[in-house]
Image (tube, rainbow, N blue to C red; front, top):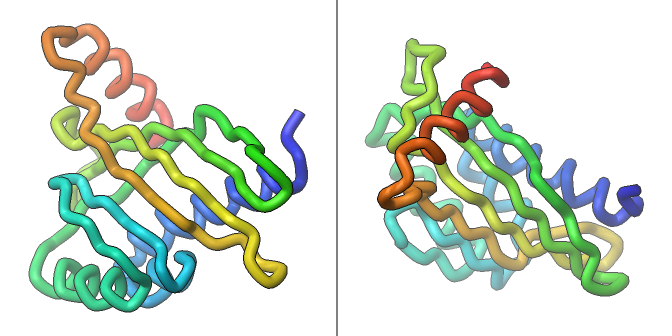
Amino acid sequence: MQSSHEHAVCELYQSLLGSWNRRDANSFAALFMQDGICVGFDGTEYCDAKEIASELAKIFRDHPVATYVWKIRDTKQVDERTVILRAVAGMTPPGSHSIKPERNVIHLLVAREHEGHWRIASYQNTPARYDGRPEAVEALTAELQALV
């Protein structure tokens, strides 16, 4: 059974991807601690909320980004102020409802309670390529496609 802290972090994660889907860089970054870290799909590291907002605004301005579809796999409360969330996500390109298998990811989010609010300390966005295991890519894509 999920603790209230784990539930709050699930809502935090859903708010994060909802902000991405709305192309709202400021809302996305506001979910991070001031010194929070965000690692993008291509490995780019953003090392504070201000940088996250600034760089994400450029991405949203210059690129027609895809929309996330996600499934939370697990949460783990480490202590009273720390929760780890693990999820999978896929993306549908603008104007499409089909998951692009090459954009499937594993998300790992570490959240901390700070001054009564849960904020993201670290968010990692890792490609789910499953090298040499095409059946794993197909299975994840089918699982995510069912959520569209």
